Structure formats: structure tokens, C-alpha cells
Image 1 (cartoon, rainbow, N blue to C red):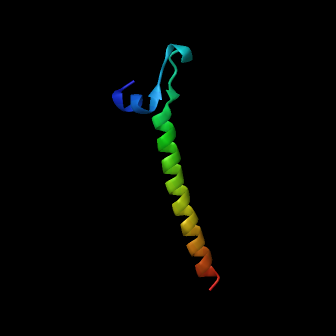
Image 2: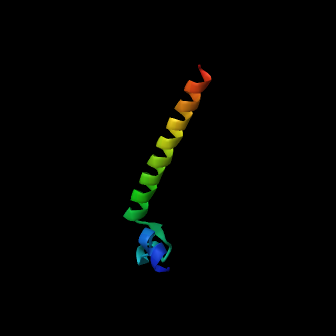
Length: 53
């Protein structure tokens, strides 16, 4: 694995060399998912309020 991929995945003998997500991957996924979900929610509420006028 290159150094960028190694930031988000680890491959150990316990997984037989297959990459598995590490804690940095989990934190990034939760953060980005929260940001995208929050923006989507706000956009939907704004569009709903416009259509009810």
C-alpha cells in the first residue's frame, strides 16, 4: 500500500494481508457523513419551507 492508503487502512497478519479500515478511516467517514447529512437536511427544510408559502 502507498502512504496515503496506509493512513486509512491497515493490513496485518491477523487479516491475512487484506486491508481493513482503521480509526482514521472511521473518524473521517463519520465527520464527512455528518457534514453531508446536515447540509442535505438544511437544504430539504429550506425547500420545504419555500413550497409551503
